Amino acid sequence: MFEKRFYYLLKIQYLGFRYHGWQEQPDVLTVERMMKRTFAYILQHKNFKLLASGRTDAKVSANALYVELFLNDNPLPEKDFLELLNANLPQDIRCLEISVVDKQFNVMDAPKEKEYLYLFSFGKKNHPFAAPYMVNIAQSLDIPLMQEAAKLFEGTHDFRSYAYKPNPETKTMGTIRISEIVENSLYTANFFPEESYLFRVSGKGFKRHQIRLMMGVLFDLGTGKITIDFIKKTLEPENGIKLEHIAQASGLILHEVSL
Image (cartoon, rainbow, N blue to C red; front, side):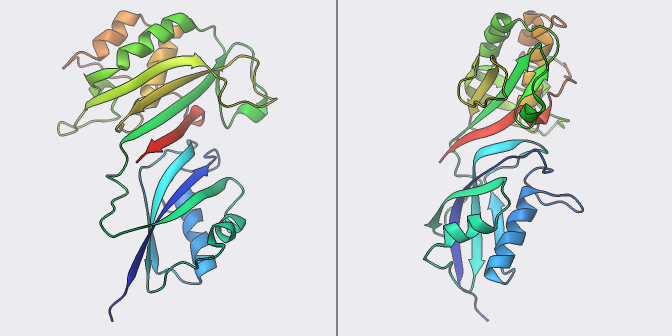
């Protein structure tokens, strides 16, 4: 029997602290699994498919992630479905908007740029409530030096040193439009420290753990474990440097996706 298919684009946001990333996996809680459960409950069937514009790792949050919904047989109810969906999703997942797309739309190819933020502080230990959003470094950090080094990532480089377990076929050339460390005034809470920072990175796409490896090397620089010349060498072609310090996931936020 012929099935008519309907296509929708959802913009969602979630706090990733209790999830093992976006993608559904056996025996662990993921954002995709919770989305599927919610849709199955509301629609009273499982004749649908979800596909995200990208994946986030365990404990990584998203202020904006696009998800395509492929729905067979019948369209979504036109009235109040967004409110119904949000009423049934967990408190740490929210859908911002739902729009109709056609079958030519490809959510994987659609993003023109992704902006990630990494929130961090240093010195005095943060209030425990800040843990899902921000990483604290106990040692003192040389912020001006880290700011100088962050700018080195801008432009087109071979990011092989910042690719997690690359193989010879892995394409590691990439272009970063913005890479900067600034004081954090974007995400605030009364339990956040008085002074915190964010590492902002924008580009077309990133390899697995790339930004957390970039943040890790900046932390190493800020604490005096490496020099800025070492970071320059990591961006040289065929440098052979394998980075080991992957910064904690909980400070990372997929802040925006531009279509």
